[in-house]
Length: 227
Image (cartoon, rainbow, N blue to C red; front, side, top):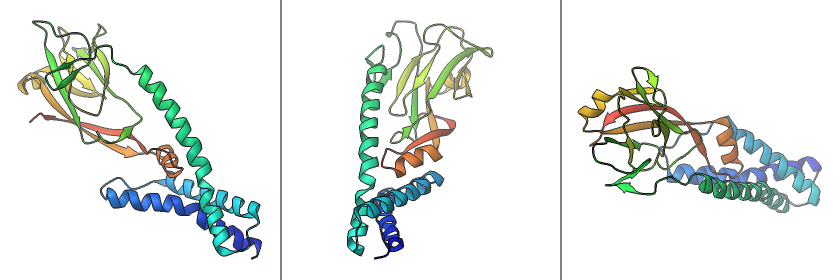
């Protein structure tokens, strides 16, 4: 084969694993967000890598050139897997909650339950099965001013119900800059749902296209009463 043909078939082989991953992902989850430009950049990079590997091996048959191209993405995928495993272990060590207990079916995020204190149960829904790079931040405020005392602010997990202490004098709860008045929280028996919508990012889809875990950012947070 001529070098141009080797490059073409190697590039095709380099894209095959990512195309198979895309097909499998959308076959299993047809409703997931469509890939954005990051995935197509990853496909191009894999095509280049597959072409280089095929040329390097000096393959002279169509099948050999495609196989060499298919093998090329494994280099990047293995490197990314190693980095994600190390980052995941580090994050797990750093993210240990100060209090590991539950209040009913909800995780208690700070302090211990004491008589006379009021706890609000918050249940994020809609994105619990996704890896979100931006945290879901909450902050208690009093007449527009942040409450800085212990338990006045923190981050919420996107998985499961969580109970947070409502500080004395709080007039509203801010979640990602979405204000929820205390009167609304009280009317819903101190339980609220957060309908979290996410969107893909170029960087998150690039890592996904290169073999990593797909990640999203939080697009909006809407509030509804818990059922």
